[in-house]
Amino acid sequence: MHSTTPAPSGSPTGALPHVLVIGGGIAGLAAAARLRGIVDGTERARVTLLEASPRFGGKLLSGEVGGVGVDLGAESMLARRPEAITLARAVGLGDALQPPTTAKASIWTRGELRPMPTGHLMGVPGDLDALAATGVLSPEGLARAAEDETLPRTEIGEDIGVGEYVAARLGREVVDRLVEPLLGGVYAGHADAISLSAAVPQLLAIARRERSAIEGVHAALAAVAKNPDPAPVFTGIDGGIGRLPGAVADACRAAGAELRTDTPVAALRRTADGWTVVTEGGGVLTADAVVLAVPAPVAARLLAELAPGAAAELGEVEYAGMALVTLAYRRADLGPLPGSGFLVPPVDGRAIKASTFSSNKWGWLDKAAPDRFVLRTSLGRQGEEAVLDLDDAELVALSRADLREAAGITATPYAHAVTRWRAGLPQYPVGHPQRVARIEAAVAALPGLALCGAAYHGVGIPACVADGWRAAAAVTKDLVSGAE
Ligand SMILES: Cc1cc2nc3c(=O)[nH]c(=O)nc-3n(C[C@H](O)[C@H](O)[C@H](O)COP(=O)(O)OP(=O)(O)OC[C@H]3O[C@@H](n4cnc5c(N)ncnc54)[C@H](O)[C@@H]3O)c2cc1C
Image (cartoon, rainbow, N blue to C red):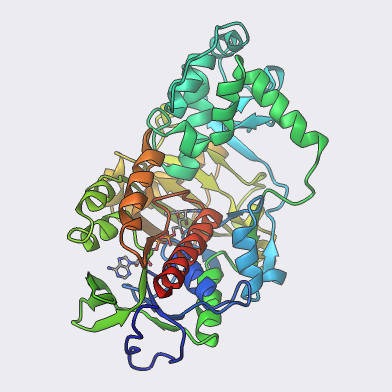
């Protein structure tokens, strides 16, 4: 084992190695939970977690708007991947997991709210008749989409932009009115730039296997329908996803980890037998291993001297920023407002990119405040972050103007909150998986160091949890092999 370094004051002592986790977003918290054995009962390390801001959670943030508790950041988790649900259960939130209601989403395009087509894979339809019935595409757009079934195979090489592939198969309108808003909901980026292999690997597999994308999607969806998974696709948490980081932090503390807020890390150094971390306040901590769970630009700074090549590549990871405007209404002021909300294709030139009718989408929210109605809008995407510089009143006014036109909402909200997420979502352009592989290969040459978080293997919460666990396992393995 690396030498037993003195534990930081106040941290638990013992024979286990000491791991410093830098960053208290969901990836860092997941890593800490794994190292303390919260998920599987195996204590692997003593843990000190250092978070720069005054709170844990990063992009997971609970808040209150007009007396109603809501999420001001991420609000939903993919339930088809097990990691986030497993973590939530392990920290006592199992009973609070709650899928969204069955309210359906729409697309605000071509002048009206139209039903979101069913039977598609990230906007690529498996059934053109079902798509035609929604009115999302123009007759010309539909005719072009149908050409997918006769066009020769599209050669895609190692990887291709999602938009480029779909445009080649089904035409620009499918990209603009379906793929762009759906991908935008996950990455706030541009479909042409986003990597098919990183963002929609199922579609990449179809593209490699089948000539027609529509037929490939149809077959893939038919296979899913034949073997129906009764579990819902997404889940929320009663009270908000923002409860998850606090619960993980509490569980980590209860398991003996030391967690500090307001402790930005300024420097990371390798020593003869481990690691030294210097905080902005001048504090010095030593450890046997380090998990770096910070956004890519921060990792780039901290690794500039240790791994200059990896740092340069981390510095090139681009981020998209967005603003969320949460509006609280008195229900009596509103007319009926069906559905879970709507997406807005950027090509339609509106200010907002989406609106979620949170009180319709989440049963727990409706139950907590039955006489209120909460909804939120999002504005901004990669390269269009100037909107974040508008003041709150302007963002609220833009949102209300679009809500009036899209859904006839003329009532005045009695409360609002604007949350700006600058550098909110890392972008996964073509070449991203290869860039991540190069970064990880460089970091693997530094035993006892691992990176994790949204910049690497997926931006969604379950992917970040999985990445935190992977990093925890990597440093544990380094420590074990270092001891041999
Ligand atoms: C507005 C928005 C909505 C989203 N909605 C969803 C959703 O509904 N479902 C979903 O699955 N995903 C959603 N996502 C994506 C998902 O929430 C994030 O990708 C994920 O939470 C990122 O986790 P992370 O731990 O990698 O990073 P972060 O959450 O960014 O955490 C990194 C932490 O590191 C800290 N830090 C930074 N610098 C330092 C330093 N020098 N020293 C110490 N600490 C430092 C930061 O303060 C932060 O707490 C959303 C993202 C955004 C922005």
